[in-house]
Length: 447
Image: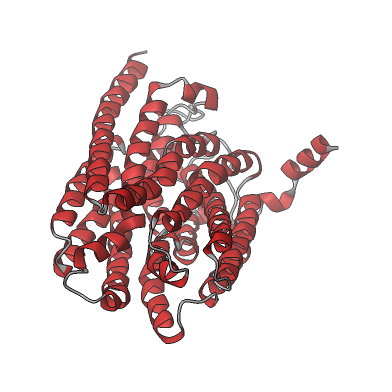
């Protein structure tokens, strides 16, 4: 019975309906638009001080732990399942699941704010964040691999546009949410709004129009450059088993883990770091209602510019390996500079802009480097797996560990030192991976 159902699903025509080859730029453009609308994870750090006040909490780690649950959902649980479904059935089923999890997660958090006891409310907070993470994971695990399948020729540029939407919504949401909270207080309507919006965009944009290309499809520009008619596509399509036996798979995993840990520690604790730096000069209300919303808007704007720019830069430099170490190393330096200057509002804005511009290239290069190395046919499974065990662990552990160190030491300095050291380790791995890839490609060319 189950086999019959799966066969029927695989042959179902509605799964194969969608925008065709002649309009393939539709995919990164709508991925960007949807990312703007549904990816609100960056706002979570804005909510931490309000939740702390709402429930009368003195510590922060128990609140920031929600970012761990969100990371588990968005990188460890959602994408691997999405990758398996995507390679076999295309992206539509994943987008339906994404809509369901996103709506349920936001509704649970809305219910949390009707409670007054943190010992009960925290379960709504954690489970809601987990569901939102899973919903985001089904989206990210589907749209990135699908764009990769449609763009074997301009992977960096297309991927840069596709992932640039993630977090960009903060440009719009941050000032609006801050204004709403000033006028109406921190309440459940914020999350009910996100529930409706995320479900609507998934069900009315992504599900009807998205599909995967045929496995052997190539754009006309690539076909014209092939040496002879009927020649094999450029590059090898690795199976999942072949990929896991390749040294580059594990080097990627190490790079992604180091980068994700440090980035998520910083982004999910940044409001609390800013409060620590400015509390001696400014009132808490001014920091929460003016400095932090503007900082998050700057963060989103610079991230948007960075994500699109680094996709183009990667293509110009000759591939993602040549770009990866740059988007790791420079943010490590800027992270230290941020802490040295975090008592100045102007320096917070300037260094923050530069940090998120460079680190904005990180997800673009992560998603572009997998098809660059392992091909497109089994991209969903390979990409989601390498991200799950590496980025997933970093995303899940970074925010909580940083907040926990702050709680037991009374400040963020030791946590920042740890994050910088780990990021520099990822830089070294990226340089090593570039050399390994060059030798591998040279050997394949000789053979």
